Image (cartoon, rainbow, N blue to C red; front, top):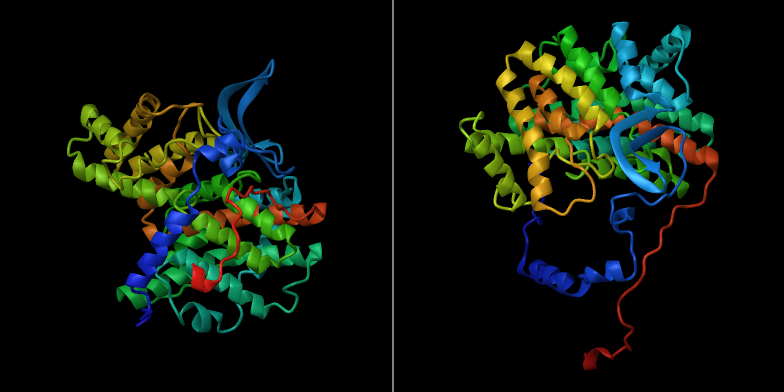
Length: 454
């Protein structure tokens, strides 16, 4: 019904592709010759300093006499340790995502009255324009929820009379609308996919004003609207841990790059969604889940460490899973000894595993987390340590919560929109220059030839 008749690869397209591969490939040795910080990171993995921010800080090392010394990873939101934030709202038996969103946007923690008023604003902005669900989301359902979400965001531009107004007051209004509407847009996109592509019953549940973001995700997604308190709390913590990660991650940097050009909020967020969709970024937890499904199929005895080690070694040798040479969920561009989000998450994952009767699966994840760093260290030249990242456990959590794989990355987006909007506002307030890194051309100069002489 929705298939493009021109999507088949033709012989001509294959030939065009071969020409590109031959003419556009750059000799890898040239990156070292010209000291190019490929990926905006140096050979040790340290990022190129491209800007300043107050919003979030990622700490993975200390400096002693000019030497970088790896330390246990830390993540701060406006100076507050993420571990203390989670401990704080958890000890009060409260949901924390809305509170952390307030912190990211405004730079300080709200008091009770401020948090209550902020929650009322989020509830007010959850509504979608009239007939938007029918005319946009259900009209051309996508097989990919991130594309569906991006299309919805771009279409909302047409419903905003002040779409291009860059006044901070207007950007704040747009940001609150984005944060409030993301769960609804993502989940309705999934329901449309299930109905039109998978022949499942269509049900659309409106969010309830008294429920938090995490509670409403489960309420809207499940046919019977039911969820337990533990399920909602762990999903809430997942949202908190994914809400921001400093200005250097790929999607947030994309947000700041597009913002610096003076573009509108809708285009900016759509660009960030495109970045987050990639399997090297937000899509990594899906890869982790798929890798473990493959591992469980290939290794029948999960307690057999030698068999698990061999499976992981085969993955690194491009002989296992998807032949990419990666053990998904292991390693991070910044963290070395530990990812604080994974460390924190693991405590709650274990509780949920016991509640769901999935202790054996959790034990397998723990075993891989323990074995993989040494295997990677033995087989690859490492400039820093390797540890499990947050994607390693988030996929397992979503699976235990019964969330469909199609929703894994959109859940990440539902959380990260808080950080994107905060960085967009910070970039605009700072009034910085357009972000425009340099690229060195390494092609030779040639003289034009008449078409009959080529």
